[in-house]
Amino acid sequence: MDVRGHQQQQLKLRSVKRWTFWSLSIAIISLVLLLYNNRPAKSNQTWSNYKPASQAQFKAKPRKTACGAVGQDPPGEKAPLLPVNGTHTLLLSAYLEHRTENQEVRVIAVVLGSEAAAYRCHLCCEGHNISTSLHISEGHVNIHKDYFGFQYGTADIMCPVPSGCKTPSHVSVTSAAEDPDVGPPVFLAVLNQRTSDSFPHNFTVCISTMFDFTNVLQLVQSMEMLQLLGVSRVVIYKTSCDADTQRLLDYYTDKGFIEVIPWSMSDHLNVSKSWRPEKAPGDLHYYGQIPALNDCVYRYMYQSRYVALHDVDELILPQSVDRWNDLMPLLEQKNGADKCYMFENYIFPPTFKLPPPVSETHHYLQDKEKPTWQGISGVNILDHLYHEPNTRVVRDNFKIIVSPRAVIETSVHGLLSSYASCVWVDNSLARMYHTRAPSQTGLTPDKLIYDGRLLGYSARLIQAVNTVLKDAGLIQKDI
Image (tube, rainbow, N blue to C red; front, side):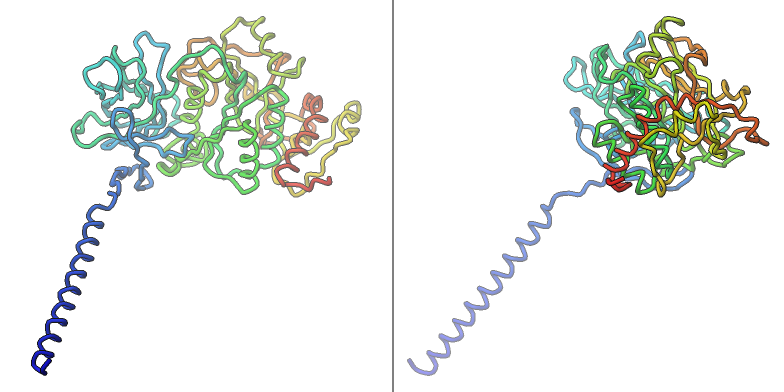
């Protein structure tokens, strides 16, 4: 081959290489662009800005419901509260209401009392004999009267259920002022789909709310006392606590005794640390205690024969029997069935640590399992057996045990609306032991009144508390 032919062959080879290079480059670039354009779409479903106090923006965790609407799990599954766009309303949870003449969905909410908002209900009814899977109707709001002077309070938004929709699976509430065709609302699951007269729990205690909690010893003592009294479930609405408290909550949750409801109200509002705004400024009464209590009653309406509404530092103790199971027949025999039972509140201030009278000392000091709980933070209720003199406070700050099916609205102390009358329990049958800071000023030890009823439980309580503290890793197992 001559020189000219060799050069032409080299030129052709270089041309083929260039063509191959550019062809592969274009193919690779095209493939990358194709994959990028067909990547999984990210959800842009976010909460609207809710601006009563925190100016926070909340992100939802959307999913598809049976009727194709965007759904949101209820509190208890770590879901946030739902702001209603165009209003200052927060939705908490939804329950099917079986007790009214016309079936409704009750949505528990927190509302701004001065805002005259109108609402629209969206019910997910797919699979029922109605013309559309999404039924839209007017919502009727009822604001609870106990809001203790704060701007925000608890409310029920009642959503009528159409005749062809017997069991709506999800509901949402929007402002009636908004265009109903603008975007899908976020839905709450509707709980209490079925009624029941067979209950997995005889007694459930609702505790709200746990905020910056560090009273570890009194927590475990209260949980063990409640089990001695016959309680099988405690529901705690928790915002924050220390590491030792969380360890105990995890321990009791694993045992199936405690249900912890994550409580995010302080993410949305400036919650007050007291029961009156002049005592602690804020938007809402005591960390949102009242909406939590109402949610607990409805959550356990068909899971528990009775619910007791009281705090960690309170115990309702029978005087002649040991357990609530034995107390309730006595109360019903005396007052009739289906009542709301109110228990007088006796305050045992931990500022005083006095020994029992000489005649009672042997019951306490001869317990072989006398604990060594040094290093465990919190109050030891066994050290405080003297209560304040009786005043009107014993009936001002009472707590209750009631059938949840008799409750329409509850407050901190007693019911606002119910299907049952409330009666006082004779303090010779039972009373509430409240170990907390004194309510009366100028108290001296000589004014306090001894009550050693708690010592009747002390041996069993000490043993149970030691077992829990050891198993939870808070004290050494060789004690």
